[in-house]
Image 1: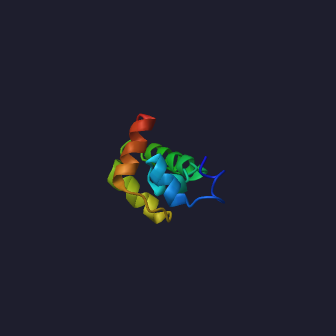
Image 2: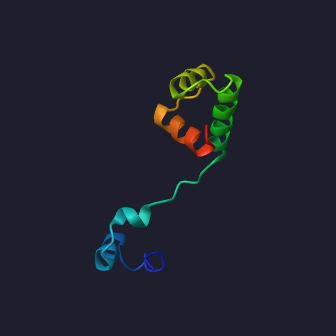
Image 3: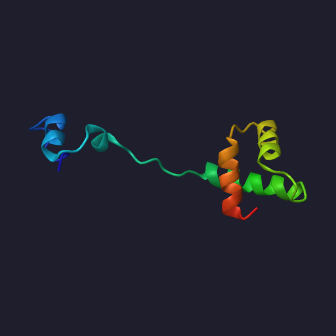
Length: 84
């Protein structure tokens, strides 16, 4: 609706009338890329190579050696999703 009338009215005026924030109009959903899948694969491989011993902190150190910057919380979340 806003896109169809952009040539007639300003985006801010239309957002005010519709009572939505302008940021909602300009928001673009992030596309989940293959990085998350690759990171999950790496975490699982590191965990299995350590004979199921490494935790979040050691996996984080191993990922840093490989050039990845990932938070411990994200690693923990991915490990939980994989049942590790």
